[in-house]
Length: 170
Image 1: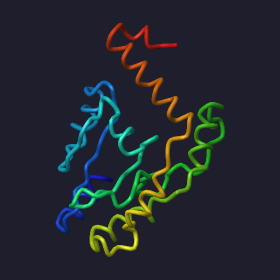
Image 2: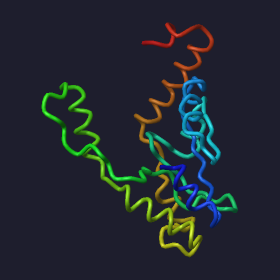
Image 3: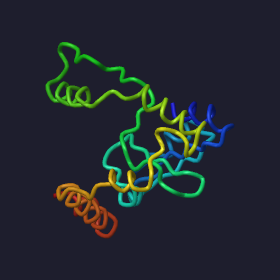
Image 4: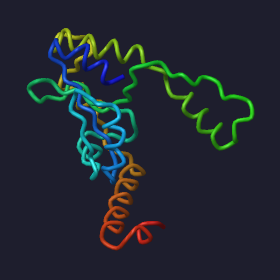
């Protein structure tokens, strides 16, 4: 889906850059290689993009213009409508609970894609491009539980690299 969007909008100047968040790049590269992307596809093994942009889940995106200015901060970024709407009968309880949580997330695929296309075609004049003040207002500080989770992740990663996987597991 991101590949198709890149192919469609590259002629008008938009470059899609996808970033996989994975501490083991080889696992991400398997998927990247299979997709054969024509757009930049990176692996962030240190989760620096989480820290810099505020990513807390996937898929999320940030819009950055040709001057390097953020015109939309980190937000949920789906390009297609969700395919799973109902939990099939007989689905294991844990999976059913997860699917119900997914279905509780707003299905923004069509609207988000339209917004990206509008911004690619109209740039700063797009109604979806935010002012610097709006970007700052939407860029909220991390809640304490997110900061704690990030700190635990960093500590676990340090222990995994320095001592071994068993040391990183609580």
